[in-house]
Length: 357
Image (cartoon, rainbow, N blue to C red; front, side, top):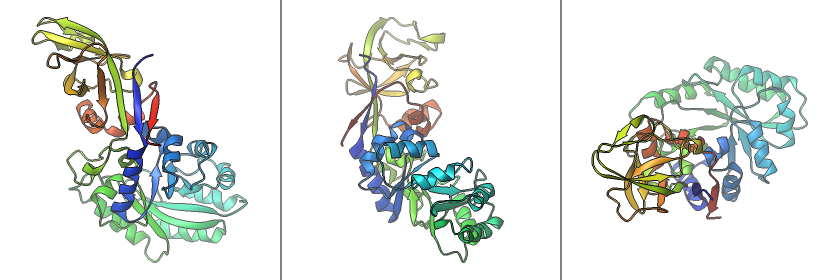
C-alpha cells in the first residue's frame, strides 16, 4: 500500500478551538468549509460538536453533508443562498443564513417560510467582495424585521487585511461597521482567525476561527498567540528509492537541480497529485528519519526527491514528514510562494487517518 497519508490530530483541533474562545471571550463558529480545509468536515465537526457553539460552511451542500453526518449544532451558510428555493432547505434543516446582497433579502421577503430563520446580515465595510453597502444596511435590517420571517439577526462583516498586523485597514473597517450599525440592537461578528489572534480590541459577540483551527498561522511574521496553536495535520510518506549520484548530475524534470557534490537522493511517494505544491523549490524543508532535510529538484505528479546526504541513517522505508508538527505548513507554503490555506485545501488522494477522538 502506498505510504502517503495525512494524520489528523483531533485533540489538537479541539485545543485550537478552545484557544479561539479563550482569546476572544466570545462564542465561536468553527469554520469547516472546503471539507474543513482538507481535514474532513464531518469528522472534524463530530470531534468539535460537544464544545462548539456552531459551525460555518460556504454553501448549503456542505451544510447538508454535516446534517447527513449527524451534526445537530447550528450551521451558518457563509455565502447564503444562491437561489430562493434553498430557503425551504434552510428551514427544513434548521440552518443559519448570511444575507450579503439585496436580492437575497428580497427572496426572503417574497418566499413563504414554514418558520422564521436566523440571519447574519453582512456589511461590506471595505473588502469589496460581498456585503451590503453601508447606505443600505440600516434599511436592510428594518426590512428583515418587517418580514416577520427572521428569528434573530446577527450583524457581521469580514476583514480584508487582518493578517497585516501593522495595517490600519482593519481599524478603518471597524469604524465603517460601527457607523453603519449605529442604533441597531443586535449581536455582532467581526473577528476571523487573524483578528482573534492579533486584534483583541475589535468587538465581537461571535468569532469565526478558520485557519487557526487547523494549527497554521495566518501571519507571515512570528506572532505570540499564533505560536500557541497546535498543528492538526501531518502529511507523511516514506522513502521508496535511494540513488547515489556523483557531483554534476541532474535530478528530476527539467534538470532544475544539479548535484553540487556526491549526493544521496531519496525518492518519496508524494507529489502534486496528492496536493503537495508543485512550485515548492529546492530547499523546501522536510523531516526524514527525524532529521531536517530538504527537497531537491522539481516536484513530480506522484514523487519528489529529497537530499539524504547529511542524513546517513535514512534510507529505504524511512519516514518523511512533508508538513506537520516539526515542519510547519506555513513554512512549506512560504517556500512554495503560497499560503497554508491553499496547501491544506489542495490535499487529495491521500487517505485521512484520525486520532484523538
